[in-house]
Length: 371
Image 1 (cartoon, rainbow, N blue to C red):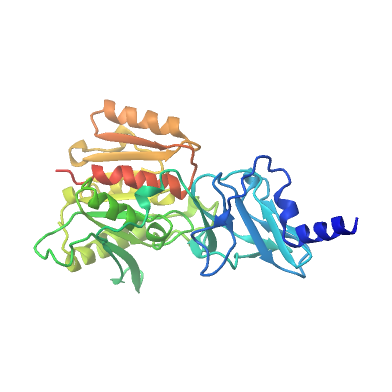
Image 2 (cartoon, rainbow, N blue to C red; image 1 turned 90 degrees about the vertical axis):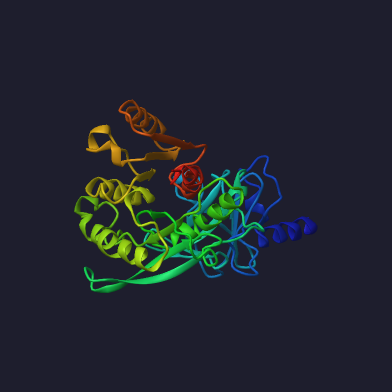
């Protein structure tokens, strides 16, 4: 009995008891998430897509992780004798990147073991569930482009505003070459860092270029002025301030300071979620600016929306299979029947999340600027 008690104390102190509850068939091949802080062992993920957490909070009464349980309140952690709280998600999670946070006695905090990413209007912890198709955004030994921060003047907002600009491999050496541009927008609660950090857009581009699958182009990410609108307040959102920044200030600055092909036929706009809504509105308001449109989990176009189809080279609509794929397919079919070059993409087994949008960019990029 004494040996049994010692064993039980050991298991509880290391959080092992809670790992075995309700997780039949769980594989114990957990590894540290690739998005952990340097030297941090937790959080961890296994080959099945489960996530495991361990948080030091010896004086806390309750600790919960926002991930897991299918939206039914997150993953409740169990306290061990050593003051660490530990637990594993009830089931496997979707592949790819996820934001999350820790609730300790009712207060919301970031996981000290994980790197932080801007989402949901705040810097939140991030975890990466290894995907079966992660090779297309993996860091490889190929020529890499450059991602640089620029500050551009904005008279309309009386400020210098930020943007991140991806220039493809060879941009700094092939000085006579000019490039098309994709203006790529983030979603609600995110900012201009999202596509390169969470989305791995630069690595997706590097790999596609190295494989000879795309015509190299520049990508520009800027803040969509979305975070001033709280969740549920979209009826109060006006596109005009951001449209002014993008059309009248950022695009002229990029064309003046980078070797772009500065005409409508060599310019694209796409966005995820609310960035898709911004893309749809601006492309319809300003038909002479962009020739390629992409809505990634971000709405639909109808044939009647577009007055001059001759100016539109591509309409790309996508979403995750756990979103509204039938609406995407139907809208694409209607556009095709009306004579538009329209393409749909449905990301398998994902919802409203970055794996959907990574895959969407991977499919969209080779279709841009083909002529």
